[in-house]
Amino acid sequence: MINGLPSWVKIVTAVGFPIAIALILLGVLIGFIPSPLMETQAIVKDNNKLLQGAEIVSQTSVKILRSICRNGAKSELTILECDR
Image (cartoon, rainbow, N blue to C red; front, side, top):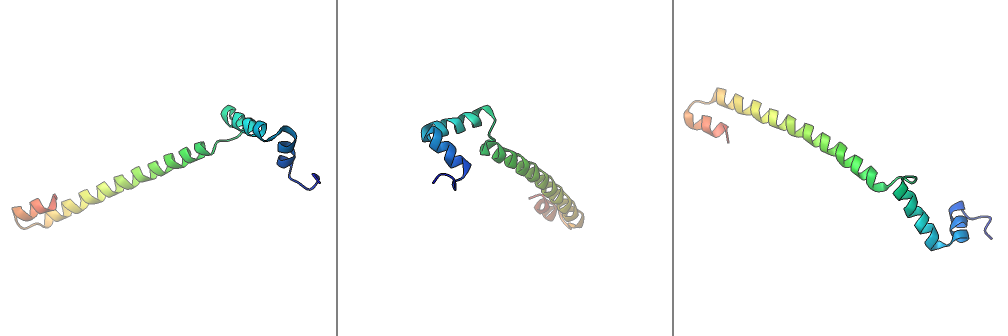
């Protein structure tokens, strides 16, 4: 009856469910089992770097467009409108 089951089921059957959960949590705490939260933090850090790069590109584009607008402005009022 146990022969066709996966190995993790055999281990849980042998040690019991509460002990298996405690061993899993201990493995995550020690670092033997990788925590899914650490993977999420790495993904968030990578996304933050990408967003910072996009923000720099956006700021540069706005500066260029404002300078083009100022160069083509005919009056003081339109120059002030370029800096909005």
